[in-house]
Amino acid sequence: MVFANPLYFLLLLLLIPMIGWYIWKHRQTQASLRLPSSEGFQKAPNTYKIYIRHLPFVLRMTALVFLIIALARPQSTNSWNQTTTEGIDIALTLDISTSMLAEDLKPNRLEAAKEVAAAFINGRSTDNIGLVVFSGESFTQCPLTTDHANLLNLLKDVQCGMIEDGTAIGHGLATAVSRLKNSQAKSKVIILLTDGTNNSGEIAPVTAAEIAKAYSIRVYTIGVGTKGEAPYPVQTNRGIHYQNIPVDIDEPTLTRIAQITGGLYFRATNNKALKEIYLEIDQLEKTKMSVQEYRKKQEEYLLFALAGFIFFLLEILTRYAVLKNIP
Image (cartoon, rainbow, N blue to C red):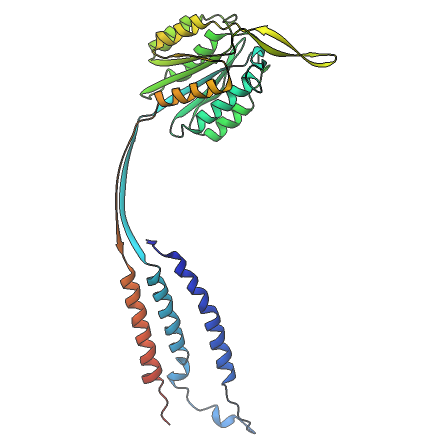
């Protein structure tokens, strides 16, 4: 049961001063008579009126409670809904090699990628999402989960230097495939972000892409980095010194991976472009949901109003008939 006008329940606060006033008045109207002895009154029988003398006030308070509930408009609801969701399992695969510290994206490539990935995760509340990181080797930072709060916490902990340096794109992609291959979801997706060329690992990126295709996994690849050279921080005895390093992204291989698996390749040269890429992937991989909903409300105030009227009627009968004083 729900109430259309719940603010009327504040009227119940008025009962507090009414009860206080009744108690005070009752004490003020008590008569007293001094007698040398009350022994003669102790055997006098008590009538039932002594026990029900407060009943009219109780009935009035009860009537007011029911009338206030009626003013709040209680309503009963009958509703049902049926939701059908086509689940999507997504493995975010993130390059954490030291080159991701380059600051052509702000504050650097890695932090920019983490920020945009977090926004992507927040927009996919119904999907299983996992996180794989790689550099010279790869590992699963978070398995597929719908506990996105925990996933976001693990994403925050990602930093360069967690594992051996290098760029093992094939190894990172293969680890992501291993996380998705047994998934029962109708759609399985890998979003692979890197800023370099495969130079580590025993698995070639194209070989990993063929494996992904065999398991019907679609791969979206993102090359992150500006054109030409990018400022890279170097620690020296005099503090941080920046030097420009060439941006070397193996776009042909990343494009080939996407083509083999039915995905797309994107190039992000700045923060805005990276956000737009994730927004585009988000639109391409929208979860399909069909919702049927039925709701019917029925007013129930009449029952409470009737109960309030009956209690008022009982108060009048009790006060002016049962407890009537005859002069």
